[in-house]
Image (cartoon, rainbow, N blue to C red; front, side, top):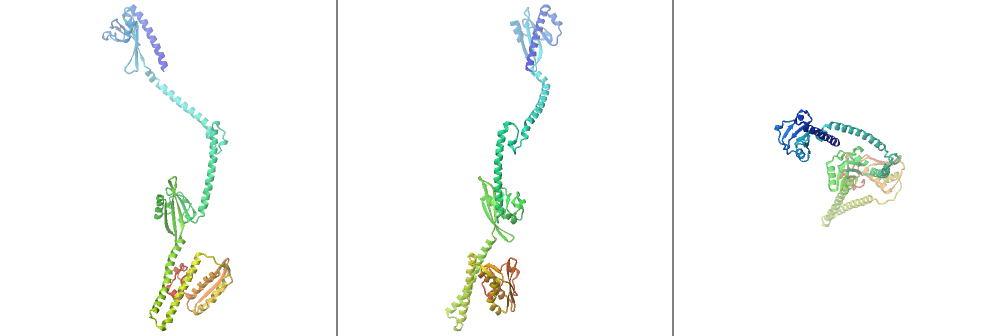
Length: 495
C-alpha cells in the first residue's frame, strides 16, 4: 500500500503541474475570462496578485478571501517562479496539494486538489485485508495440520516397548537407544523390587506376630495373616484407614503418639488373650512416611507373671502356717507351759508340721527343676505296668478309705521319663482316693487309640465343679481349702 500510494501521488502531482501549465498559458492570453469559463469540480484555481490579493477563486468569492502573500506556495512562486506545498485536514484523513506558478505580469496562478492520506487507503482496504488474513489463517491451519500429521505419524506409531525395532527418522535413533537402555534398567529394578517384595511377603506371612504397615495418613499399606486374624479383617482393608479395622481409642491414641514421639506401646485384651502392640515411626530423609505396628501375643508370659506372683504369695502363706504352728508349740514347751504327759503330743505335732514343710519344700524344688527344663533320662515306659505299680503302692490307702481300686487295659509302651509318668498317675489316683466316698470306686484304664496312649482315671468321688475345672493345674489352687487341709497335700501335684 505504501508503494501504491507513493506511485499514484507522483502521478497526481505531475497531472497537477500539467494542468497548471495549461491554465497559465490560457490566463496569460484571455485573463479572467478564461477562468470564469472553466467548470472544474476536481481542481481549484486561484489567481493572486503580486501583493497577495486574490483576483479570482474558482470555489469562493475573492472579495471575502484574505491575503495569500504568506502562503508557502505563493511565497515560493513569487521568489522562484514555482512553488508547491501540502496541508492536512484536522482529521489527518485528507490533505490538499497546492502548486503555484508566477505569470509574466508578476501575478501568481495556483491550482489545488484534494487527496486522501495513506490512512484512508488503509481503512478502505481493511475488509479485503481481513478476508485475505482469514483465508490465509485457514489455509495455514489446514496445511499445518496436514504437515504435522505427516510428520507425527511415524512418531505416533513408535513401539516404545521395543524401541530398537522401529523404522522411523534417523534423528530419533539416539533417543530410542536411550529409551531401550532405560527399559532394561527399569526391568532390572522391577525384578529386584518384586524379589524383595516376595521375600518380605514370605517373611511376614510366616510370622506369628501381627504386622501392619501404615502411611503418614494412617492408611493400611500392608498387613500379614496374623494381624488379619487378630483384627478380624481381610486383605480388602488395604488402602483403608486403620480406624476401619481397629476402632479402639487407646490404640488410635498410641499410633498418634508414635507419629509424634517415634515409639509407643500399649496392651490390649482380645478374646481371652492378651496382646502387646509396639508402634514405631518410619522416617525417610527426615520426613515421616508412616509407621509399623507389631502385635505380640503375651498371653503365656502374662499368665506366667501372674502365676509367679501368686506362687510367691502362696509359698509364703504355705510356709508361714506350719512354721507358726511349730513356733507356737516350741514356745509353750520352752516356757514350761506343757505338762509332762502332754509332751509327746506336742512333739508329735511339731514333727507333723515339720514333715509338711519338708514335703512342701520337696515339691517346690521338684517343680522348679521341671520349670528349668533340665534333662531327664528318657526310656521306653509301659504305662500299664506303671499304673499297676501305683495301684500296689496305694492299696493300703484305698483299703483304709474302703475304696475299690482296679486297673484294666493293655500294655502300651511310650517314650518318656518313668519317674514323671509314675508321679502323674500317682497324683491322679491319690486324689481319686482322697476325695472319694466311703465304699467308692477308682477305675484306671490304659489303652491305645490309633497313635495315642490314653490313661484314664475314673472315680465316684465328689468331683470338681465346671467353673473350677480350668484352674485345677494352677499351683496351690484348691477348690475346697478346708477339705484339702484335712486330706493333706500341698496343692502342687496337678500343677
